[in-house]
Length: 442
Image: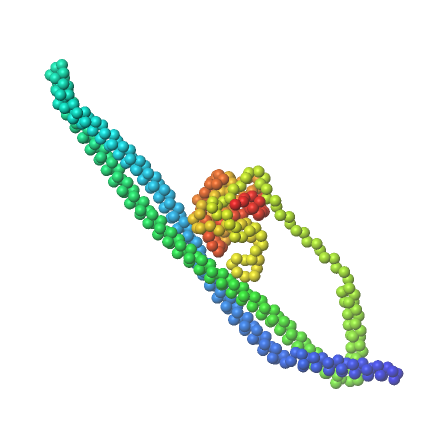
């Protein structure tokens, strides 16, 4: 019995010791609950402020992207204007060439007529009046005599008339050429103005893209800050809940300590049972941690070889531009941030307005403007193979058109989500993007 009492006293003492340890841990480790709640309020206030900053950045980004869209539209209009002007200039140069040929031909006729007239004059000079008299007096009748005399006068008059007409024709052609030269100069002035406008717009685009990139970086930083605050707030809330739980337990345990001896003994026995249960639970958990888990194997998708089903040889889409700035692979987000993305094609930098050629013959499946791809075209080459061209400044081919390999389908630009003028080329095989370099090479 004495031993039982000692056991009970030991259990009660152990209970009191445990309560003391809990109180000590609470006072030394966690501090004051009110202070922790005040820290939580500060965290939540900081999160609200950062979320307001994020909202302002998102609004600024939206405004910048809207302005970028306007600039994209301007670049499309300028590209179309330059294309049309160049077409008119080529036609005007052709007209000038034809007119110059007419002038040269007329000058040649003038030279020939003048040479013939000089020969006739030389003949008349060298033979003198005797030739005229012989020709006149050899006439067989008065009518023949009059006809021959009239012929000599008409011959001289004809030479003069022909020279005058040819000179007038030459003057007329030269006047036409002067008009054409003036029109060409005007078109070239318009072209120079358009090129200046294009350069200024490209400069604005570059500045705005840099601004959007900076905003995206700021947004990423703020989002990371908000995420950190969310985690800190959740941890702080868990800390406060634990502190309040410990405080509630301490109050209950204090009341139990002041209860009757029988109640203390009962509590001590319950505590001993609880400790035993905890020991058993810890042992079970240790056994569980000793188990071996089989890691599931992941499967990797195989890369398509990309050989054309039809065996048709594809060609490079840009003349004189072969550098690839971004390949078919995982890459960092070009618009900022730490996220990576899969780039489903290749990027080929080239000046805005550079002609884009179809890599192979086929039918244009689509040709329109997208928010991300900008002005883009997809060509169906048959057998499940499509070529895709993005970010163009101007679309020449239309949906439903049949195009041949090498045909100009559009002009290089920087429309949509783009950091500068380039052509994005993708190849799709049976609905899946594959590496374009399996089909084309510079």
